[in-house]
Image 1 (cartoon, one colour):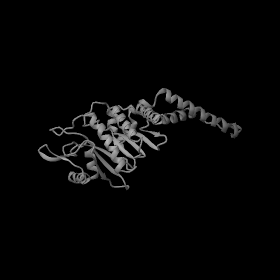
Image 2 (cartoon, one colour):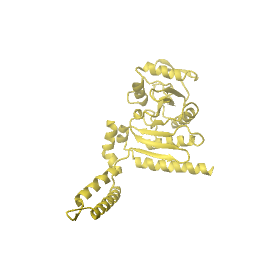
Image 3 (tube, rainbow, N blue to C red):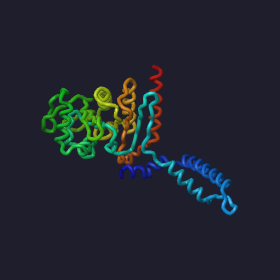
Image 4 (spheres, rainbow, N blue to C red):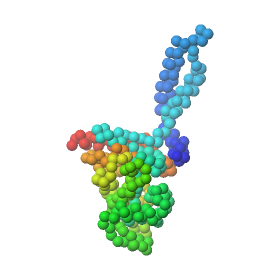
Length: 298
């Protein structure tokens, strides 16, 4: 919560939201409403035969405060897909705070996590929901027990390697039907590092939506900006968000597998990479409109 509040109060957030044009528009509207109300009360109410009117400076100050609040940064942007009852959302938050959503966790094809530092999504997931790394390994093995795998030696030990797009569906504590979908989106080289392949991420997303449609439920989904960290893909973060949304909308044309997809930007990433949520929201609106136009044309 502290990091989200820090993102809200940051100069970066206010610079994009509190522009002169937006502020003056809100201030004129608020001032007009307040002044109309004061004229109305002064006409009907009097004290010592004088109209009841507040100080002009009070009205001006109140208008400034309200206009500034109306111009505040919006760290969550939501677009509704007409005719599908699906929400497409982007938010600045810690993904693990979204208690009502199932979580999409990026992984490698071996589903190994002991060699990854603590900032990675999968290690944060392990720390929050499992007491030890062995417990997570056991949960993954149980979820993938019927999935064929190849033997491979990685960092001196034998591991199972699964195809790109393999999904380990693990139940989460809390509301019934809440899952973590660990998706294999990157292969590993001989040093245990992810091999940057944009095609692998695209294939993994397509397989993920298919898996959720066939074996999951319609609970809201939360997904980080896949490919923006240790997968080392060259597209920038806005392009990766666009890829996730395009893939989701394409798969949703013939099957509804969730009521809401939330792309979650961590507050640290939001500040360090200077995301512009206005641009993201504009893109979301255009993307939704474009997909609707394609569907109607078909």
